[in-house]
Length: 198
Image 1 (cartoon, rainbow, N blue to C red):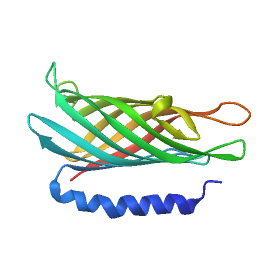
Image 2: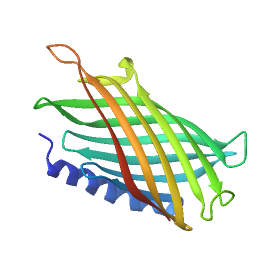
Image 3: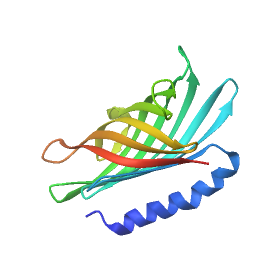
Image 4: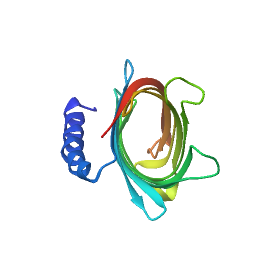
């Protein structure tokens, strides 16, 4: 059974490590919720030659699962002004409960992401739209995990320069090995949240 103690431990670890990255600048914090889901995310951007990289941590919690992740992506502004595309990797670790049985989720997934800054061209306040997809095939899935797929679409409206409110649609599907055959857990959720930059 997934306990609140595990959630508290991961949140404490995130809170312990993130302040140490703030000295490098470009720190973002995000909290998204609905009636049954909580999502915490933290990330840091830094320049790398002509591109920039973004590294982050995340935590998804619901009654049936607890999934933490570490991610790293190389990003660049391409094609048209305001558009950013990126490629990276995401490491996942967690527990998923299916029919009163806990399965260990462990995977390293490929990450593809995109982001578009609308600015104030179409709206009176700056708007940012972003999307990502993350997939771990069987060779990159470990322990009980057989495959993992995750996708996310988000729109953020910047109320102040470094603060935004957002609507986020997130979903995932995880497949696991079981003596009785493969089982899967899938979930999708619409969340409301805010993002702060420092």
